[in-house]
Image: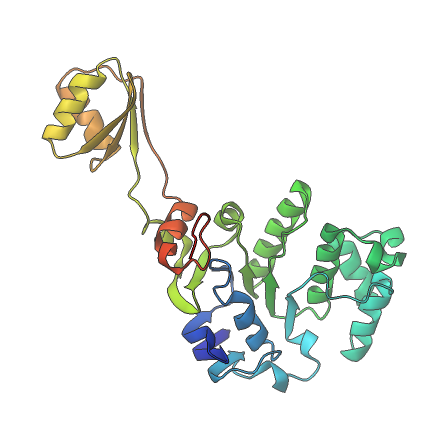
Length: 304
């Protein structure tokens, strides 16, 4: 497991992470979400021993990462796809990591094939790579030691649609194998398709640690859409029942405060013809925007 307990990091007068506690368990893809400047990368760097906490603890399998000998056997991580020597080939980069962690050379070819870097690409200097290719190389490095814990910071940046789908399926497979998978991302649509658990922070503090479905349900209640030639009369009846009704056009109503089942029952009782009756699903993006609104460091148009 990944365990963070009352973790705090200060840089002079600035507090990047404040009294943060959460647990990431194996067998799940856990999304690590927060607005820009929320402290996600700082937290990941403290977990990997790259930044010393001001107070609190950040442990992996019960120990500080620095205490794990040959760390790639225990934790694989991708924090910055650009953090690679540009003059080396992809294969040479992975060979160096393998030697330092006593990983068999054959594993290098296995992970290169896993991430789709062909032999020709593996011989190229990393400095010539696109961002998407560097992301694939970073994922290969994370997988090199076949570790039980994996952490990725914005791994989808620069990937094309095929690459995004591949990463989504990879993370799910790794979690299904019983590994602990923590993924930081700002792409809500992808997290909605990839993660099943979430840790959400804002300005260095915990906002939520729960299932994706549970978090999404905390946002604005689902809206019922109704299309009918009797929009005006139906709206009046629904409002009399206590629902909030807003017309979209002369034939379409948006209804809050009444379920689709109840709207259908009312329409049936009053013999209103319905052309459409549907419910919008709870949205991760909507819940995220609402629940982090007061934790955003920089708002567009904000002149603070």
